[in-house]
Each structure stands twice: as structure tokens, then as C-alpha cells.
Length: 84
Image (cartoon, rainbow, N blue to C red; front, side, top):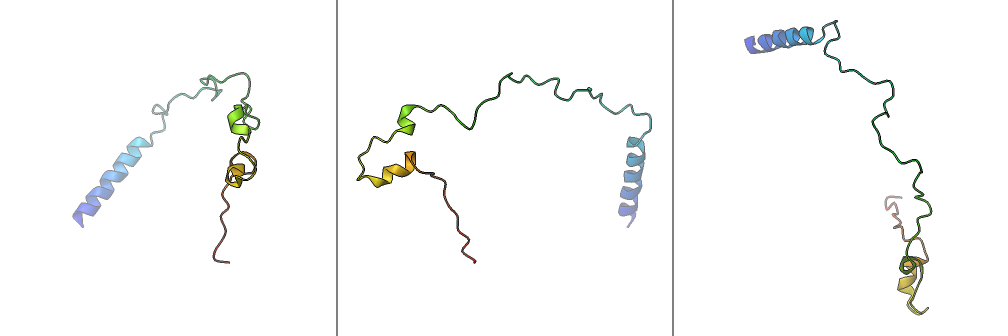
């Protein structure tokens, strides 16, 4: 019980010291938060990236249907809810 009281008193003392009203412990904040960033002037076009031809063309004949998913269809996996 004495340890708990000692820890509580020490914690309150440290809290009261750290909460001083003079404000000397605060770091200065610039007016513009983005002033230090070095960003390009033009935005990158993520929606229409220029891909090489070997990514966008299908060089396999039509009987090879397994290759169509890689270049012609959306290859995003579909997750079904099994609980419903």
C-alpha cells in the first residue's frame, strides 16, 4: 500500500511539474505546415499509366483462355461472404 501511495505522489509531482504555464517546453510551429515539403509541380497520372506493349497485348491464340485474364479482363480477386 505504501508503494502505491509513493508512486501516486511521485506521479502527481511529475505531472504538476510537466504542466507548467510558462510554455517553454513547446516547440515552435511554422505557419505553413507544408513549407518543408519538396513536391513536384505536376501531378502523377495514376489512372492512365503508360504501360509497355507486352503488358497490354495478348500474344496467345484464342484457344489459350487462361491468358485472357491477365491482359483483357479485370484480374481483381472476388471474395464471397460464406456466412450468408
